[in-house]
Every structure is written in C-alpha cells, then in structure tokens.
Length: 216
Image 1 (cartoon, rainbow, N blue to C red):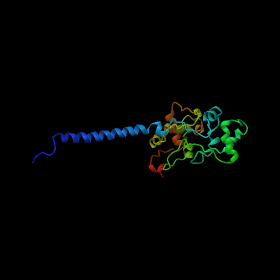
Image 2: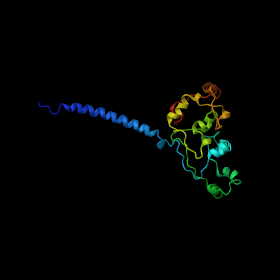
Image 3: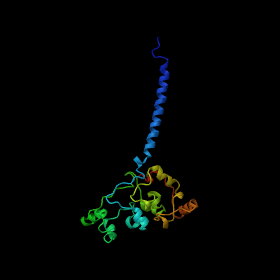
Image 4: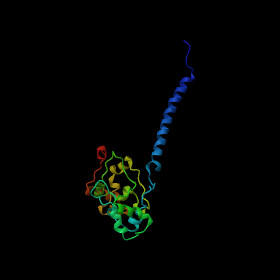
C-alpha cells in the first residue's frame, strides 16, 4: 500500500504539539505577569475622590487617631466611613470657606452622604473582619501601607489570596502589641519574630488556612 503521509509529517506533528505546549505556557506566564501589574491590582494608583482628603495631613501631620474617623474598626467587620458630621466637627470652625471642602459643606446642608471611592476592598465571596484582626495585633499599616504618608489614598497591597496566606501561615512575622495597632509609624523591634511568637500565645492567634476561614 502506498504511503499516504510524507515522512516529515511526524516531525511536523511533534513540533506542533511541543509548540502548542510552549505557547500555552508562555501565555500563562504572561497572564500571571499582567495580573501582578498595577493596571490590574491598582496598587500604588491613587483613585480620585469627591474631596481630596489627605491622610498625610490628618493622620500624619495632625496625628488624628484612625478610630476618630473609622469608628467601628474595633467592633465590626467594616472599619466604617466617617459621616459628614465627623468632618464638620472641625471644618465648621476651620477652613470654613475652602473651595475644596464645598462638597463636605453641601453634604452637611443636604443631609446627603459623600460618595467616597472605595480603595481597599475584597471580593464579595471573601469574608473579612477588621475587628478580629485588630484584636489579634494586626496593625493598620500592615494591610493599608504607609497611610500617614498618603496625600491621596492608594492601595498598598494586592489583597490577593496568596498575600493573605502569607500572614495566615506565619502570623508571627506581622503581629504587633495591641497598643501599637493604630500607630502609623510603628517600627518592629530587631527581635520581631520572638515578639510575634510571644504575642501569638498571648493573643491566642492561630494559623488559620482552611478555605472556610474566609470563604463562608
């Protein structure tokens, strides 16, 4: 019987198969690289806000405690956004005619909340509780970055699952005393791991890595 396919067909088939595998691998690698860029993660990208609120000025220069505005952070899953009344506690007396604060004054006059743009948020299928992290000694800057240096707030971390697991698998690397949780300028001591291990026992911190911890 005459040969139907040329001898080179086997070579072409092998090259096609190996080539397809290589192309798929390269595409997967490229997709992973893109997925880490700020274009996707929005890390370090300041998002426009209806009022150019500066954490650097309020938390850094003036030294306002995080809880003054985020009043529910110790008792709720949500840190909470400050109502306009909180802003007007000060701004009914200072910078009362500043043009940039007109949206704040309008919100107060009209009893209409300011529509702030969310900067840090996990997907709807992820459960996250601020209060439990605060109680276990996780500082604000651990997740939110150097907030006291941000003129306009930007996302400091990807908030990807692998990033969360870095802490959940080794919490001793990230814990601080509860008295320092809201200290925007906290610097860990040289014996950070020893302190972390001590705090793990004192605060009864567990290495929670089960899927149901966050996906409920």
